Image (tube, rainbow, N blue to C red):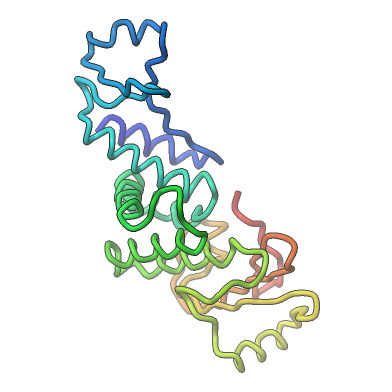
Length: 231
């Protein structure tokens, strides 16, 4: 519970990177020489990482390792920063990442996965555990579409119908010569959410612009302003 509280308070700072370090019992250090005082058990092989203690069981420490895997993949590598910020507002980010890390390692090896796997796994996890939260599912789709320099395969959220897309791009005078666009029908105002951190429900088209040589950007349909990507 102490670790959960500390993790959630620190996560709310939304630091660009957050590391979970595990105690290492290096040869010649006082903590290794006195490990018996606290019931520390550690791996006898490098990097001599802690296995259990009087304060955390082997199972509890393994759970934190699973959480750390999800943290590294989805936050530190900036795969799902929009979805995880939303999670922090509405759920326990500790519990979510712990569940996600556990699920991830049950379907893929932690160091053997594709970028597509990253999004399919979190989408499947959310569908199973938060099926009613459609905004969260749409934010995962947005994170997916904003990860690629080139327009990616349609997943999770399909574009508006082609004729409607043509009509909208023409009405907004979008530059279809130099850029490609994905227009997603989402149920909240993304611009308002980005600037005010609140969900305004309704039917809003989300316009994502691809140049092919840089990260995509969101174009505000009201002003055609390019919204700055989240860091």
